[in-house]
Image 1 (cartoon, rainbow, N blue to C red):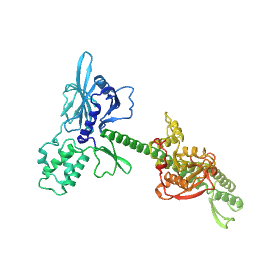
Image 2: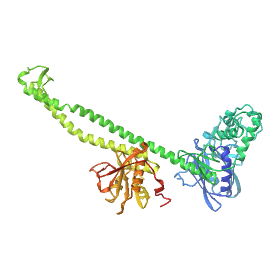
Image 3: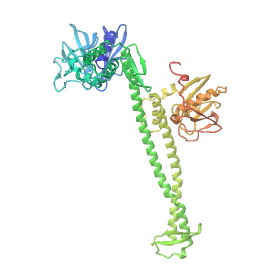
Image 4: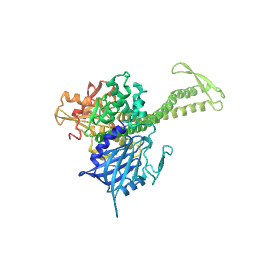
Length: 570
């Protein structure tokens, strides 16, 4: 559910319990839309975050640190001037709208304590943070602006006025009963949003769903009164059970209580903890998606360029494949000099290689011998071209195979760290500008995915660089596992002189199949052999190797998280 009045009412109660009586120790503004207060409250330090990003305005507690700009924005300086060392008196919701009011008591030198109020308006594109004293505006995050065509001017020194609500009513306004008379059951959600203050469409849809479940889908005689009572009962008597909702293993929403159709949920003790978890995970998923799209675009551009090169090479090769024909023409001309008259533009000669007739174009200004010489020159040039094109084709094909393998790595990546390793690989390959802050240290600290299964350690590389390092630092008698005919992680079973059981080999094969290009195709053929049978050709790309003396097994892909070593069970 969004940060509408229904959600904010519960959230403000929680924030008030946490921060009431707390002292403001620090104020930073990491971005134009976000302001963070560090507050010492009840023997500990908490961070209160105010975000007025039009796409997702919110207020809440955060646990992660934010970077403070070297030069503080003007609004941040204003807040520091008036609110540093101030004490929070109360955090409350204004009426039943998307406005949070934070009351402070601030001490001033040579003056008595003064009361100041911060209004956090979480209203989409009109979101703003406004600081007031005695009802007068001291400043705002959005600066001086005009709200709703000048209905409410936000100017320093002027009285602070609440945003206009138009024809919308408070949920407990009896006028709603008459308004609901003309509402159809199928349009309950839309009309609640239209006529009631501070209610988002997703909340209204939940109200409609619960109303239909309680009263049925047929319109009854006392419909409007029942809807009015149901609306107020839902908004003010719903028992809080904060949770985060997932859908297909992806984070979907954060709720005061679980939706009726929510199957995958994670419960929390408080709403602010649920929201903090939700936004952290959402940002991670968003960053992961954006980075994946960026890296995919870079590698696809590289693949496109290599394919274009291969097309050009193929065209040159096609032209050079006629070299043997030119040699034969030159040879036939020299063998038939006495039969060809000077000045002819074309001649037809017997090809004694296959007893066929060959038409040969001639330059009438040159002698027959000179025409033959030109054909030999063209033949020699084409031979040299073919020789020169061979390594070019091999290099282009090698690059194409490598870039395709990297693209598979990107597709198989499961988190931002996996993509960071791929990015490092692309930087080393010259496809991206190398970052000033290297992730080499992180790569060394977290090397491969590690599994423990039935007394054996199994490692799985996450990218071509790790695959190479894993394979060629393993013991000669370790078991090396790879997908046949597919790009995949290199998986190694550390034997330490013991023979792995068939069950362990099966687990390693299933892990390898999961981290392979064939993952979506069901059963995948996996090969395994002792590491001593694996070789890396000279000058080959990262992750490429050859192997022999192997066995194969067909398995279904399986992630096997139950055997995965994580930071929690280190």
